[in-house]
Length: 107
Image (cartoon, rainbow, N blue to C red; front, side):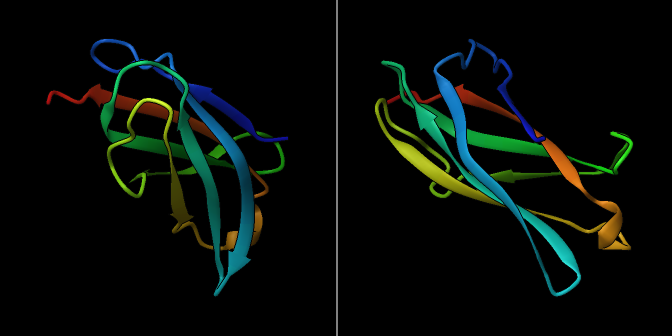
């Protein structure tokens, strides 16, 4: 079972929630997709999601990072993400854990 959680950016990104995630295999690679929702009152910039790809024993076999699209999420907004594991062979990847962190958006 995958794990999703928010980690803290410089001023805390407690309002960011990872949701609607899933993992697919395509062209011998595993890809995790999902979205980050901003449930807070502040806008966030450079929203980065980190994926730890796990084997059947729960060991980390690879980790990758990616940004949401778009990279900034206004208060009440959401943005999608896609992170691909470059681990070979892909069949050893059976699960994942996700973290999100971001910087406050200064207008």
